[in-house]
Image (cartoon, rainbow, N blue to C red; front, side, top):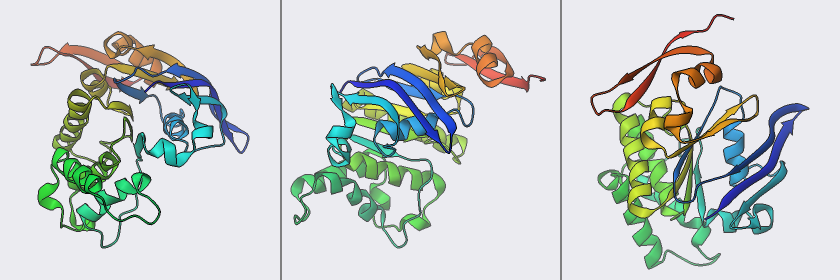
Length: 260
């Protein structure tokens, strides 16, 4: 689906959060949104899926204004996994995953065959089938993140939005989540838009990158062209070295903070 952001801005309490953001997301690709803290990355993600309705400008989905589509219609084609999530008391992984089916269910309808099939598929993709009867509160951080991811996948979205999906995870679980997300794009054609902090995850796992700095788009394009040591210095105000890893991929390593 064609997702376009036109002249989008947002302010709160007179403070500018986003200003005149214009971007046409690449259909069916993996796009990262990066930038310094407070640049407006998470705000943009919430605007895209209409969790934040008080913005200026326009966001269109296949040419239709998302404000006219409404949240229910949007949630049938777009799912978001926010950074901060409340730990559901006494819910099992399977019960949590079923919550993802709510946008597709009728008001007085029960679980359908399609609901069950989508939940099973989500649990399998996220490798959570063996944990389906465990309470979410008893899971490790990595397992819990995969449980929440299963819930969003049960929505069967065409576009998946992720806000810092690897935050608080150790290196192994970070890679596990990124591999699952890339698999969704490769195997199911799901479009992925995610806020990330790790610039090397962006270089390895993403097709496009949008850099937000000072509340507007600073740069956008292919990660290998955008994320060089020189541009990383400008974006994050750090010195960085470049080297080639064992897989032949160029890696950017920040080494020190620039003196102000």
